[in-house]
Amino acid sequence: MEEMETTGYRLSVEGKAGEEATIRLAGRLSLDDLEPLMADLQAIPGRLKPRRLSVDLAGVEYLDSAGALALIELENLARSLTIPFDLLNASGTNHGLLSLIDREALQRPPLRPESVRPAVVEKLGELARRQYRDFLEIMSFVGELMVALAYSLAHPRSVRWEEVKFYMKRAGADGLPIVALISLLLGLIMAFMSSLQLKQFGANIYVANLVTLAMVRELGPIMTAILVAGRSGSAFAAEIGTMVVNDEVNALVTMGFDPIRFLAVPKVLATMVVVPILTVYADLFAILGGLIVGITGLDLTFFTYIQQTKSSIRVFDFATSLVKAVVFALLIAGIGCQRGFKVKGGAEGVGTSTTSAVVSAIFLIILADSAFAIMLHYIRQ
Amino acid sequence: MDSSSTEPVIVVENLTARYGDVTILEDVSFEVRRGERFMILGGSGCGKSTLLKHMIGLIKPSAGRVIINGIDIARADEEALHRVRSEIGVLFQADALFGSMSLAQNVALPLAEYTDLPPELIREIVRMKLGLVHLVGYGNHMPAELSGGMRKRAGLARAMALDPTFLFFDEPWAGLDPVTAAELDILIRSLNEGIGTTMVFVTQELASIFSLAERAIMLHKDTKGIIARGTPAELREKSTDPRVLHFFNRQAD
Image 1: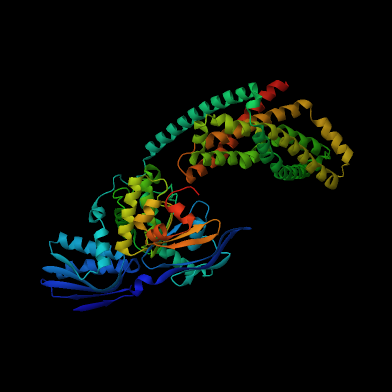
Image 2: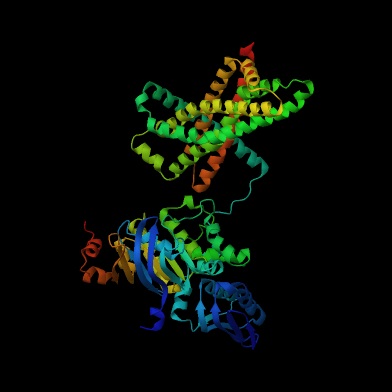
């Protein structure tokens, strides 16, 4: 006879090797001690090789399903060694618990194998297929959105103008402080950095040209668009995505609404209105930033700086910058809504789509900007 | 009755629940005994779910106490709260399975967090738990691929992963067809009788109230508290309160 002592349970074995053996268990057979209990029990049949194995549960105060699992595993082991096995003195509840456990369930393999990591070629193919599908989806969404926008132009009363106003506030007015701050700082930095170089040639006054040209032609629209993509494009994707997950979009369809006209059009219209306005503010604040550096650091007067700014840009530059802003807005809101509509699954799907909305929007903004750069170069000539 | 079956293990004392200025529950007191199936009943908006959220420690009471196994969960320190949390399992109304994890991963999550068991032993426990809720073989399926009844049972398997002393159910029958609901009743009853888990349900499902409840309390939004207590049969047969009778006889107020 030997005895083992652990925190929860007590185990003793009676009987010699090759004869009938009884394992007496007492105390708590619970999840807390599952590992040692399992190891203790599993060692016994192999060591004693008894003719018959009994487990006496008379002293057991508490048995949970993990404890029951250990007993059943012992039984399975005994069976596999062709040792007859008995459970003695199981109380009513313990018996109920033991009979609840589906012994077959422990053996049966899953209906589906665990997903294995695909090979490189397979991954590459899957990626290409996904990109292709994504492209098709975007193209069909662009088509639908264009139809919906054209319909809205022809039937202005069908547009939900209350919603448009709401999103104009969200994407526009609420975004103004951050756009203004970032542009101001950008103007300050540009003016400061360029002044370090231009000072050497006594060309301080050209700081105004540099800040204004860079901002109005390129950075103003791009910075604003990237900020709006991060602020509002992501919000559109998350909002529509959550509606898809909650069946709200399906509800709209069954009520006879076109989800694109109902959800996407107000967002797209609102964004197309506010992004150009935000761009103008971005330009102004950047020029203000340059002005601060010009006056405080470069001994320029307010008047000369403004004069120089005015002479450095043409209406054409300003107008093209607004056109760019409108196109960027269309891209941001469009891709945001598209990513929202194609959400699958639950919370994780919404997260993936939101990320994808921002990343795709920024990518498309840069792509469109490159196209504009080339186009405008030839138009200017 | 012997002492073990009447011993109160969950005590709610003078609980008051407020959201801002709106009082949902006022001065609610009751006890749940070890191993019983206890139901919190009431119409929509009476504060049943709010009460449940207080009982599992998701919301702190504005006044009063909730004591689980001798620990006041609103005032317990982190360590005690962690211990209590390992003793309670909750099946939420919308099953709340993690959509990005397979069923086996969902059930294994609390085991990996609260125990130091080796992975192969955890896998074995997971297989057993899925067997308990009749989902043998579905370990590698994703929640989205299963029917509502199967997801509910998978949620139950996860709630039971640590062999909790207390199981809380928030409207477990919502959205289930009558046959699936009846199967869930049988499963819950066999688990309650086999393992002896104390079970608290929040529900308004008449059929399941009669098939499962041992004792019940009924809340009402007008009184912001308990308007009746007893066994379901007592509530239906003996109550004189029209609000209780309407509820049990499925009549309009």
